Image (cartoon, rainbow, N blue to C red; front, side):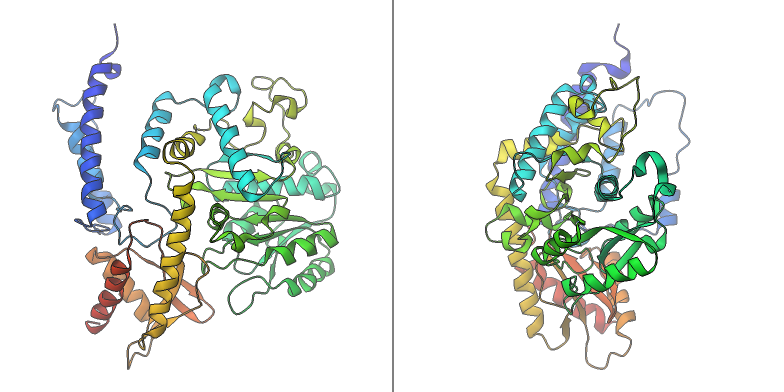
Length: 477
């Protein structure tokens, strides 16, 4: 007898009802017929969701539908065209359905036997992404859960390849203190990875940036010397393609040449911007990325799939086995990990890893590759047009011309004095009234509003409305 909790017919009924709910949500969200974020203070929200769970099953047949309706209503609605906040995309429905399949099958991926189809799917997706970067047939890599783990994985491989001793086995005592050189605008997870690896705060050596927040290649030599003078051995340069705060792409060809001359590993954090390789219109932004030793690429940013799907790609696929070198007889057979390429647990931090590749595989297989290249190029173009509009407005200040779909700016109405406080106030007002969801960033020149045009349905009209709404909010401050 099938236990009631696993009854297929009940699942069929609940599934049909849920898809109907989500389809209605999509209809309303894509049209903008609901608040972007139905704001409630954190403490109020936490109290509202406190529940004394019962020992008995729910007696109301509509309980599950009511629960999902409440979750949907009180969520941040990324499919709303006026969501222009963090770098998290509005997922394709097909990719969400694939995620449902992955969740129900629940195939872990440490060993092939636990996820046979998932392993083959991941291999295909990794090779597709590596090919788009211009890596050769010897490239390889893995999927993991997010850019922070991805960057750590790549830097662990760099450590093993370039430390000059077996850091995995001998630890930090096996040789001199190590260091990574990276842009002063690098994502915080790069410095965090250095500290996780035991290199300390001084293990991340910042490199100066130019007036558009791109790493200055001519400053690499000075950073390299500073590390040596501090008794450290620099082994890797972490470039950004692009930076999170401003969307700036570091000049990869010049950085690659520096790394080649000094024998350093070149890692590119392309979590957001590696997707520029998908379109001929944007490919120039990542020129030189094919010379990197490793690249991190988040599909949940610019490839329209639910999080988390991060590819860690290695130009020399053999390096993908060097990040982690432990043996576990209850999982792996104990030989050369490369002979067990199908057991991806040898190359990732996770053991029970979800079927991460399925949602991207399904999206590519069903919608074709052109959709993604067009999406990247179109959102980049829309950001450029919005920036050009801001540059013409006397009461707005554009930080820099955007290279991608990230735009930093601030409103400076006549008579305003504390511009930093004003931007924070304006952002809070728009969030709380549900008209837009946008974020902010603090830069050397102060606080700037920051938008990411990541929803493919965000239009120039929506961005015109953002300008209008900011002006309205400023008048009432």
